[in-house]
Length: 163
Image 1: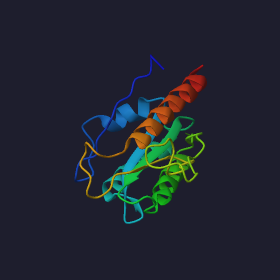
Image 2 (image 1 turned 90 degrees about the vertical axis):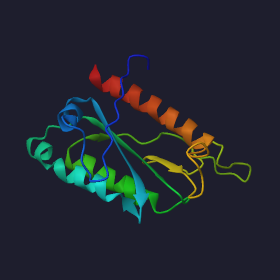
Image 3 (image 1 turned 90 degrees about the horizontal axis):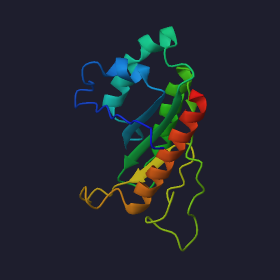
Image 4 (image 1 turned 180 degrees about the horizontal axis):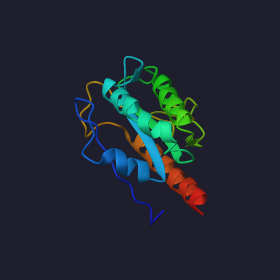
């Protein structure tokens, strides 16, 4: 949607956000959680961010905001759903409204990494970046196209709830 504004809040190596980011995130209509899947769950830096959200939880500051999640790892599976499930649990603790991908999988013999939702993510966006791939090589075209469709869905759902 043309009037949708997106802002990325990178979590640094120590698990810290830029100054004022928690307040800006709290003012957003939608919060999309993202982390690499590492050893079957989100990176430790994301966990620090999640723990820091307890003040917002106590005041229900994120209640009824749209939520979703995405993850990326080197393996096709790599227990990515455990990361999405972690994001979902966090969102539900905050009383948020979770939105999945809404995309059917590309799951025939003819399909591969260039196709939409090849990883069959329903609860959230799942992407693959092979461990020996450069940033120019991965995530692959299918994952990037899936991410665009997921982003479009999130913008549309968020707009419906803003009415």
